[in-house]
Image (cartoon, rainbow, N blue to C red; front, side, top):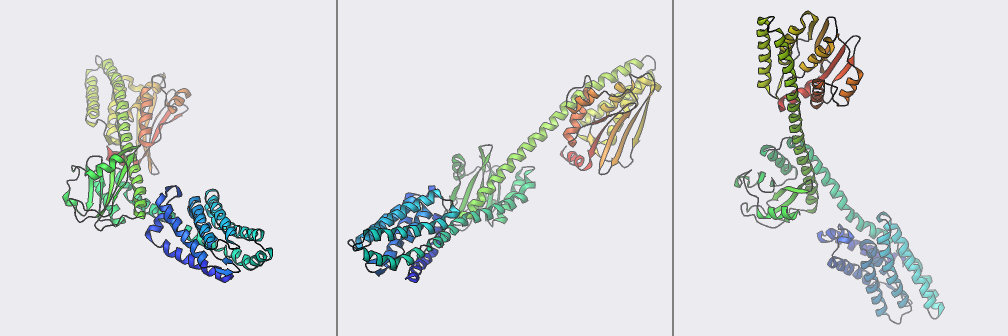
Length: 557
């Protein structure tokens, strides 16, 4: 009899296995409980009610009782699909069992335990962790069968008949309840395939994201077309498009010749998907311009909570938009949205950096001009020829500055500007000022204009000038590993610690506006600001140029 119970449970298991292979049943299993519609719950209830009734009808008669698998079907249905399925299945199958043998010895006990099994399985579905369902389900099934035995003993007349029935059927029914675990595990394995599919499609989305990432650094028609082409190849689509809220930005694949990219107005279907903010899937449709396409999916792209466009995937054959493809496409659209948002933010940051550099540079120019004109005015009466040369130096310097604007220039051009500045200052200080150049011959790197001159000015005006004796300024440009170190060192009065601290904290250090501006600009360009060191005597101010980054900045400029 025990083998007979397992035989019928195995038959139920086989039927469920074939059911799980069908598309509709798998789709139903892979939905969350709260997402099941009343029709879906009714369908599942009907399936497990039929299993329970089959279990009753195929039972083995033992002195008016039936050895059957009804409880297995009730408990399995309730655990897998919730209390409504369990309770209704218990009521239907319990009522059926009672009606086919109203005056039977075990009809009322079976009715009671069938309904109890429905409630108990529903409670397990709601309160027990999913990974424990199969174990608790076995215990619940055995408990329900044990309850049936107790009720038979209590309600049977004579008692000896009930005892005889229990002695014959208790072991097979209680042991047979272990089949509940197999049924629950089988159905759950199909439901868990949803997570496996999601993980696999998430990996595909990440792989595509890695391939497309470089093309989001500069968003244009060409880069968007490349992104679409990568997506199309990786998911074997027939066509892929990206749009904004009004126009098609890129379209590759079947039917591309029908569209005027960048100017083509998006379709009404796309407008509707964007306005509603929902994914639109058409699995058996024919597009007006490209009748060869029969499957399409439109996914809205979001940036900062606002829809900014859509990702569109097309297939020539019908019913190609599967659940797994939808999972992948949703994940991919989220990544694309993030990449586009980051790209735009990066472009805005770049623009802000350039604007800040221009603002900082505009502050330096009047400051230098004021000092230069003072130097010329002080020598114009004493030495007109020198004054003419100084005016040439100044005009050349200003011409460089006007022509270059905010562009990157070769470091040696910057040094020519410095030399023009020093010629003006040496006219002021005469033999009091000595300038030494220590420049590597093979230096070739681009930097912004007016980056070194303010440091030289600081060394002369705040270092050498206050001292009574002669002073030396050393301008050094040297290779240090893969970087270039630019330093300006003087032998004048050393810089005070308060100025070093203020510059490090991005605070205005007295009247040393040029020093703070250079610190800001170097920080923006190379990530690290000025390094200021007090010497005995004098001061050294330096900064490092990353040659690779300098080349990148040069291309951007």
